[in-house]
Image: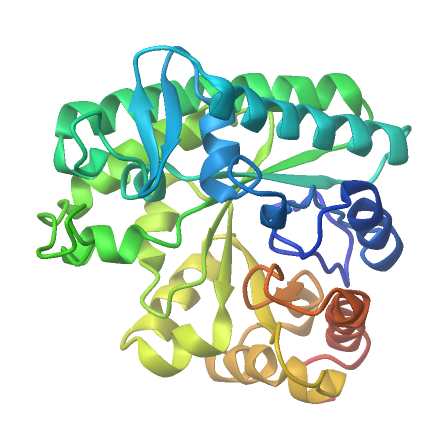
Length: 336
């Protein structure tokens, strides 16, 4: 597999603290210039978060905000318009500050299963409870993802675009632990084959981009994500390796098949560790799997998850730590 990013690249997962998208974009371009990402700023309110950005991308489906969260609606309203305005503003800032960009750039949308586990039906239960609603959401999201990527290509015609789908709720969807809207029960588990097929359909809409799937849960379904068509996996690496039996073998299979790794190793809270300690889990994985140092240089180092809960002043240090860790992997290899 030929990856679109240079050796020793680092990037963010997606969310960042604060409400100033221009400042957030300035930090991203300054700290992780080899693989910048379009940040999400959920502190701005409903519509600026992960699910709200997904709602903004939907085609021919509409949603509005209720006290319990986003709910499907018959027609567009002010909540949906606000979500679209946030996305348009973010893209305007990306184009303004990254005009002429020739390096890769990463944009993200919520994945179909996390969206279905988050958005409610008009009568109040989660869309996940209705297989037909899940299909409709996935088809609408796939079309919206294609349009979103076309817009990014139009604004940054010389950049290679990475399309990241965020699926933090997918393990809960597969295990049947997504709570009902009432909170008194759980929705029925989705069969892995069904989950894989739907995810594959949405990833196929990113045919002009490089598809990445992010799942920060310790029980991220690595094999399923690989089979669905993810060309790279973005994981909380230490959590996956420590808490999920079989994860190392599944990761080895994916890496040997040419799937890229976005190694989440920089903790978003607490003191920033030395670079060697930060990337220790990556080196240990490489040693156990017997992989080459040349491949190690292609690992993208990231925070373990989004940075929305981090102190704004710490964000540049966290992204700089990811970049330093990536350089250490390139320069010192497995045994450095």
